[in-house]
Image (cartoon, rainbow over all chains, first blue to last red; front, top):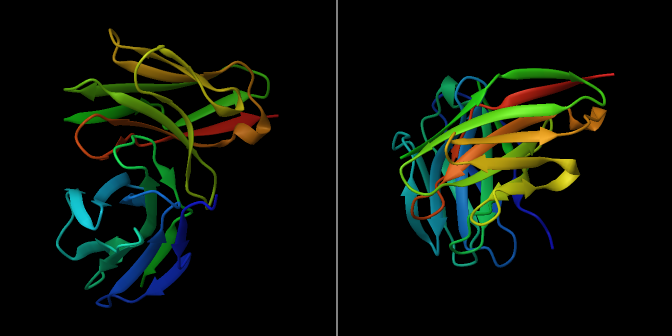
Length: 112
Length: 113
């Protein structure tokens, strides 16, 4: 069974731009969560989607948004990029109501 | 609310020595506890998990952890370190509705030959 895939793997953007990251969960997984990982803040929860609905949201500004499609694929969007948004963005998928998350390799975003 | 504290951001052990990575949690509900490992430029891989039942949990690569409710701890151990164990290790807790995880700040394990 294929794992969680994230595209692109690396991205360089400039301040003020917007970016969209994509995550394809493991087949059959309906829950997708997004995390931001930085050296200073560690792993921080952004949001979780289940059956196209946002089920949980972390403490991030409204510039960070997401959505989930009917095939469970998810996208995350960051508008008006700031230097501090440079991070590894990780996506994790899980079965419905399962506590076991499977992580993708991440997208490394660099904002210059 | 849940939170995790990992004591020691960096741990060094000699090859063949015991590995002990510490994790303490706080949870207002019965916790589900996890250890993940992250190798450079990769995502997180699940090592082991505690949900219910046996408090001593065995995971992959020879790792195990023991859930101690009285100490609110879930320390990760491995009897004999291998060079390939060098990585970042994260402890995580969840327990609320949905799948919101709370991660510790991570412990970087160095294995000295």
